[in-house]
Length: 163
Image (cartoon, rainbow, N blue to C red; front, side):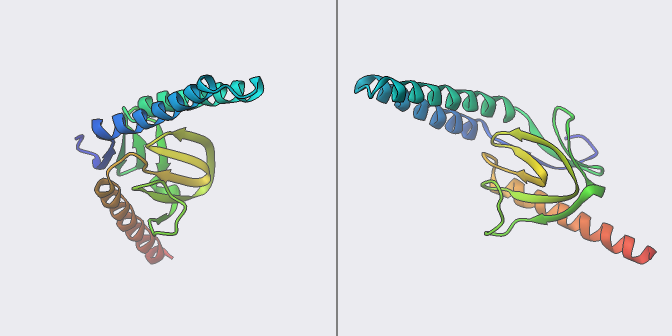
């Protein structure tokens, strides 16, 4: 780990294979259903098209989970160097049961809205919400969420003393 990286979330090889394998199995079943007892040609085309979309998602999942999410002093980034969120822009961390968050993950709310982004199984951004998690281990996400919450509390406390 780099000296400035405080926490890491990454998908294990087993989780990657299981996620991609499940999606590939769903695509196979769609194609099998389209040809084993063919419905009318319109539905057959729809099933084959949906299978192609699911295979595309499986490919995106495989590519995205090759990276990892890193918490640094500046904020969150992935291992390719792409910035996910700056620490100064993060408003809150939500990790409760009823938060709209990825599996084994947490939700960030930011002060500004960013461009939509989707790294299946790793993170997504929609407006001012960023979901972290998916095929990642829960203990890594919990540690990162707690570290982020602590850093935000320290930041907010320091800024309240300046006022």
